Figure 1 (cartoon, one colour):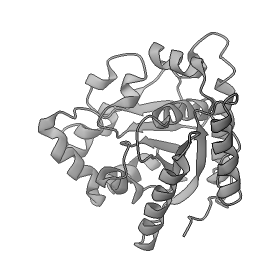
Figure 2 (cartoon, helix red, strand yellow):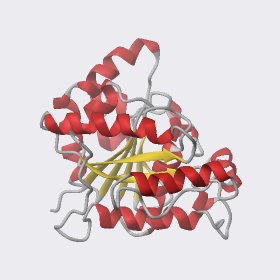
Figure 3 (cartoon, one colour):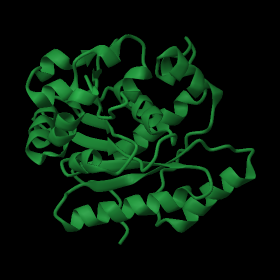
Figure 4 (tube, one colour):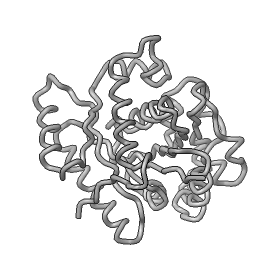
Length: 269
């Protein structure tokens, strides 16, 4: 059986569209007949709060890592047969330390990801909005990482810090590769936002930035409030849903999902 790819979606701060990207690209990949698992590893349970149902109150990653719940018991089958969700689980103050330690423990995380790789084409992991121990622990066992790049001034500076951290991880033996940067919250009518996008395409090496960019679109906020991926917002999906389809298709190419030749971009530095 071919081993699936683990893709971490990471950012250095919140509010950059990380969870929106992880959720909607997971949905788009499943629509493309890719057996997909979305893991919520953010203690805020952002994915759980972005979809309908009391997902944030169910056992999940915390319990699986603690050994009190099996993966097959904790995983949630969605209405889209190719898409499963592993919620974060209970992240109360009483469990926070043990949970963080479990995620930072390479052995536990490695065993879990090795197991789920056998059942899915793609495993996307939504991480905490910081490059701390939890995110670093996941990156040590991931195949690829995708970084949202908010189309606002100073965003590129934060991404450079992330790239530096990733380069350090690789120097220490991690195998994770950078699949690319995805521009988010792009405002086509705002000069400063367009300037960030143009600077990113110019500043970063060729192909480092995805061709498709996520706009700041009211339909995304509406979908989040409704608790659905944007592709399920209406019977006829809003136009922005096609952007996530484009990102999903580009991700497949960048990580070599259809071939043995992985197209990942070398890390800076």
